[in-house]
Length: 299
Image 1: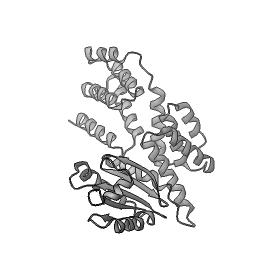
Image 2 (image 1 turned 45 degrees about the horizontal axis):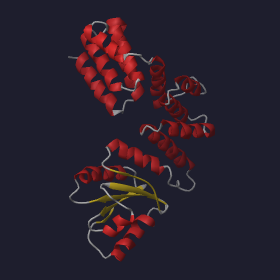
Image 3 (image 1 turned 60 degrees about the vertical axis):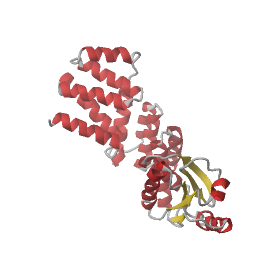
Image 4 (image 1 turned 45 degrees about the vertical axis):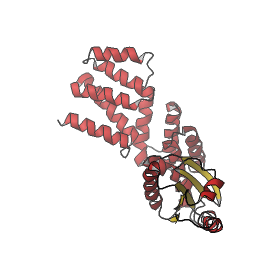
């Protein structure tokens, strides 16, 4: 990690910037972190950047620039608030953001950009994996249309790669097209195996079951008035899922399970488990909900 953190003559600062950032990004992703000692959000973001860059194993580098010590460089890039991060590839700024992102957002930002860095010569598999990572990062960031386009292009070139087809289907689900997603999965052989395949099928099943509810407030009032109306609770959870409120859906299902786990043939528990499966084992939200469920079941 390079750091232009002490005052220097403008010429020396610019020369160091050219060496570390412009030249350094010829075949590597370089992130430039504009910060200052007095900036609270900077102290939150910089450690996240350092960890995420270290995790790339040298495929990305971080350069920290103290805006107080290097005002000429900050002015050149029109840095008006900090933290500000610019990403350089091939000597050019290609993306950036302002403000302190969370760890998952920082990782997704870096993963997406790494796909634009040329793969090592003679290593086509690396390039494919980076393109898949970029498509997954776009999906994690909520850019479902972009992810669907990226996965769709990969699916045409690699129709036998399960992770590509599954990713394309997940992107289609995110776009509200579960039937099209199911069709996309149909090209895979029955014995196809991939860790994301069960997650994708669960997401499709949830999306197909998530029927929009015309009046969620009335349904919520009905559930509040009769806590033993477990069928209505499952219906309310489905409506909230259809509206994109998975926290609200989980709250309703957990309350139903806590009151009577096996009510309505265990529909609430089955629905919640399907939600967790669709989110994926490593998803932080799913982990938190799973802990709440365990507390209820094993209390």
